[in-house]
Length: 326
Image (cartoon, rainbow, N blue to C red; front, side, top):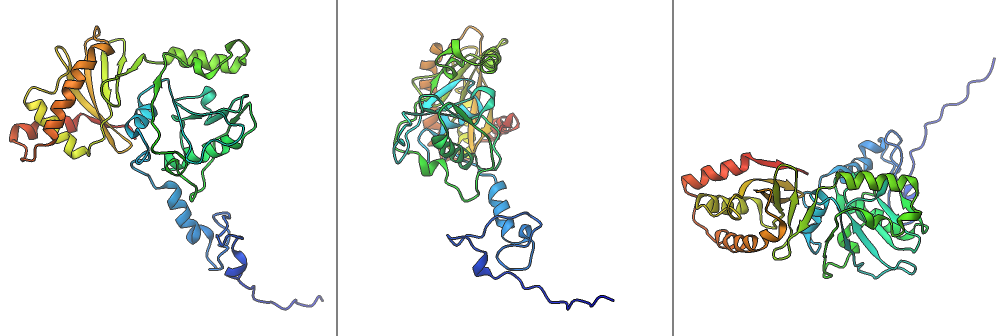
């Protein structure tokens, strides 16, 4: 009969030996013992904070970046646009430029072109609740990718940098709106069949869009039934809705004959009022009315008296017609 082996009590791992060289607790499987030595599963110990950091929604992911309103517009409203990005520490050797794009072929998160330049896609799905952190992780990986290769999606480290850590916030952010996605392929004749097909599909679905030049972050777009102006505004939502209600009650919320303020979007912590425009009204026709409206809005934002009953009803109507995009 075989002898019974003496049973020994397993020793818990010691905290000092479980940390990485930089003193951090390493990431392990959710059901594994936490490396800190607590005796609990990772998901119930240090994994809980890590999971919370990954899933917690950042309401204004582009806050602090130059042109926050345009970042929101390019993320949610504009089909085809690009904007040059300036890195805080300058461009690495072999990277002549970094460009933000609304969309890239095959929905790639990023692309390192043959010449070493980098394109970052803004409208991709993100793995966490912080778009800024996800985009920063994509950017860093794109800077190190081999020329001529796309960057695949992945979950960004919960403690990784954000765009605000990588970009020069003092540099101008100047979106360029395109009529199509030809900026994807500098040499269209030599593009792959997949990229060409993706380009054709994207161009067919793109809604004609123009950025106004006289005011910030206002975008005209054309649809089969009517045209619209969608204007991303930086003001606190409650304050802005009060001002819009005052203007609406005074008959000053339109952008000219046949136009109508129909509601607003809520996107990434900012409010985006939307106007319906007659089909024949183009972007150039909106420049002067938009500039005049901006002056009226500034005056309405400065009013501190409580809303009148009529203004409260107007505000309620605006709130009921508000749609949250993100």
